Length: 333
Image (tube, rainbow, N blue to C red; front, side, top):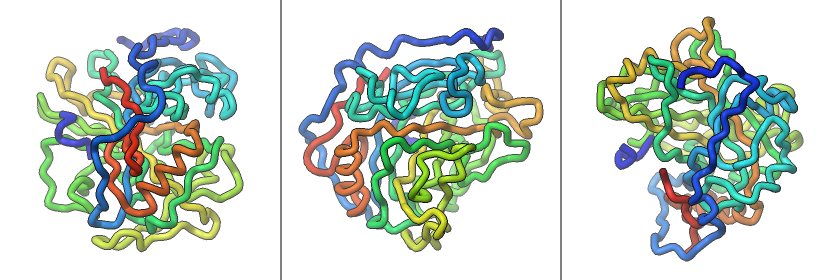
């Protein structure tokens, strides 16, 4: 759930890359620093870590789906690694001199999603994007391992012709009041897998959740999904009673992208907005939501996150490493 406090027309020439200059503050966020905040154990036994990554650039590239083909994809918004383009590989991620994430190049990962447009065809910017690394509610916290260097994957389906599962693709209006929760009040059961009609001056929340069971062998697959799968569900309210299947036995953190958007009535009803990946066959606006991820974390930092925050079931907030240090924060827009 987006925390309560977090309350352009389409370009026809897809060969043109619209690159934004990364926020100059990104160069000031390198490394770790002492943390004044302390971590605590979560009552439900799960563990959580979050990091800010501000927008880096937009382009029509997709180094996973269309590698080596500049301008061949629908438009994406990129976060984190500043040098991602159609030619990016797991190895080249680490050549970036800066990123737009907390900790700078300690997290050279690449995160991207389709661009969001309002009714007028103008691009809608996300507010202070948060990227979660959690145990999730389904797997035992102690079973989580650090994701391997070079892992890449896609969550969701850009070519969806029916609405996707709300376990993967999640939209909701912040004003909605739900008396039904899954495991935690921060995860109500009122999400829908398409753009809803949110009232003016509300906040539209958008989340996409990646699979966290890895086959233990392949860092990728032909569709960037088959080497990963989702765990079986735990039985609420008890967390950690689900499991990964024998075909995908390795549990890694549950990664999710979390965005918020202020609802401005001048932009038109939110259920008439669209994603750059929405096509005529898309059943409802926003139903093609998907996200791509390439692991560029410093292995030692990710091990600290897993061992200090996730395995013991700690709440590490934003950037806290659970050992008295934190990632140096990026300055938010």
